[in-house]
Length: 252
Image 1 (cartoon, one colour):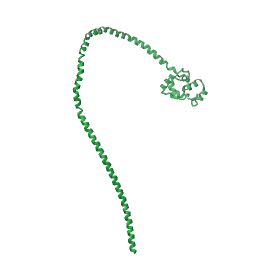
Image 2: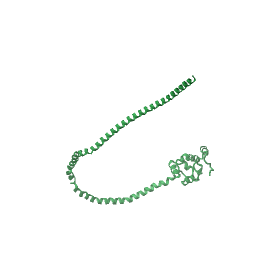
Image 3: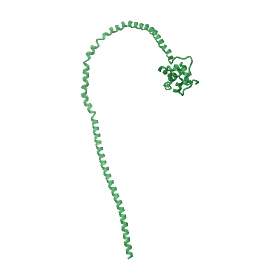
Image 4: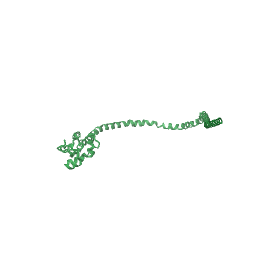
């Protein structure tokens, strides 16, 4: 009885193991079948793509053959049309042959050249007179230009004092903001020695001074003219109020 029980138990265990193994093998078999079907579908798709490409290549070959045939036939067309083009080119030659009498008629007035030459010969003394007149007029022009030059040169000498009248006693220009020892020397070289001169500067004077001192709007930015007006008027309180950073009267 015990042996029979063990035999049945072993049979059942064998069936269970076999069923488990069969299930796993069946799953793997199904996956292999799916892969096979997928591979077949890709193969079919590649075949269809190959057929399509083959058809396109055939169409390209036909188009190429057609183009080559047209290129071979193309030179024959101008050769056939050249015979028709020749009469057309001959027509302008016939038209050009008709104006020949007009050319001969146009060449008839050639004998008029001696008259023109005679006029030119007769005009030579007149040109000589004109040359002599020009030569006589040159000294007068040079004489007239000399006073003109002297007249224009006079304002150049009188343009410098536009910076204002110079006072008898020079002022301490370093009191103005923006004027140091170097700028003071440059201003004195231009004849500017007092506040009254700077206060009376015009736009032309400012431009001239800035060109000399290599400034670019610095006089307007530092308000040199406003400072000079206050100092020239002796308004020290207002000057100290508006320009507290400026130098004092004892500034060296």
